[in-house]
Amino acid sequence: MTETAATNSAGDGAQNTNEPGFHIQRIYLKDLSLEQPNAPQILLVQGEPQVQVEVDIAVSRLSEEIFEVALISTITARVDGKVLFLVEAKQAGVFEFRHIPQEQIDPMLGIACPTILYPYLRANIADIISRAGFQPIHLSEINFHGMYEHRLQQAASAAVENNNDAPAAGEGKIILPN
Image 1 (cartoon, rainbow, N blue to C red):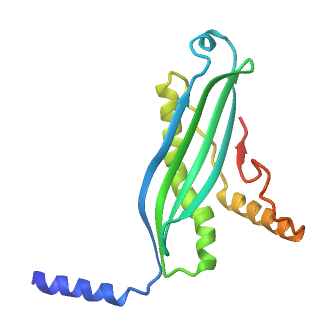
Image 2: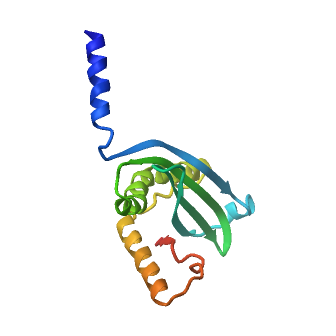
Image 3: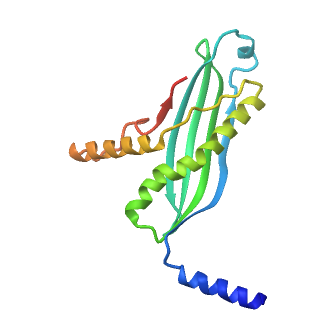
């Protein structure tokens, strides 16, 4: 009976080889750093820290159907103009797109994959900041669909202007409000 079940499973897999599929291969913390360049003196300064958060997306093709998507974030907290702490994090995932049309892959890389990764990034950032002895910072939700549409508009504008230069630094990033 076990052999029959195994044979049927293998046969079913052969029939579905051309079926479209999206699979998460792995989610991992690729890079994380915390700096407190002005410690311990800055820790004695009383004041409300000013926090700046930047988030960006990077995509790398690993093979024909497999991509790495990384959310890159920099959080800088300042008190009286001096850096209290700086966190840089890169949360990544490996995603497989099997038999999905190319025109559907790009939106998935820019919207669906970052949406999957973002909760992991938020948790890792809150954890490292609290382990450093500060109140954790819980990042606001991000509309990755809006970010993707904004990037498409930027690309269209650049094409209309026939400007082949790279975009200015920071143009593709999201800077979250305090």
